[in-house]
Image (cartoon, rainbow, N blue to C red; front, side, top):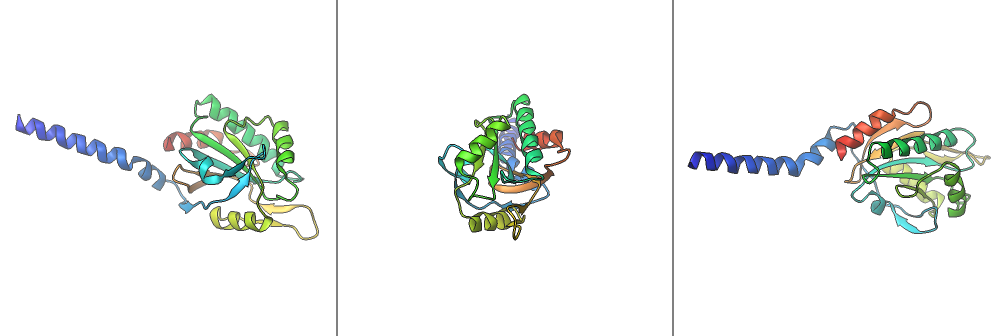
Length: 197
């Protein structure tokens, strides 16, 4: 009887330990571990938001765009819209926050982002478009938190920026990047979200 008692106690302790560090261990299995810093912004509705609030208790998938982009941003945004549908089909919409971060805050006002996002059929329940900071702030944020360039092309209205989708866990840690322009790995992204859930 005593032996059986200790088996039950040990099993309970083991279960608690595994439950307690399960998510951390899952995050450690991803190829990156970069702490995403804070940025204060406005969304497409002109509401003040903080990235940490959007990422709170949610898996974050982010990209960098600007609405005057004449190359990669349109296909990236179309692909993010496809990803949003696939996330919904998988029943994961309450676990994931999509964020498109403008790197041209001078041109991309909330009104401009609202019009741009509507053209792509964005569902604001779990997809936000951010602006409302200075260009210097967003360039530094992209460089430090996402290890990616964001800079205006001299003598042009175009910007150099990443063409990836970025995955961050609920801990606010950047874990992985995916191709965002041509043939994004939608199934892999869904599988990674399910791993982190």
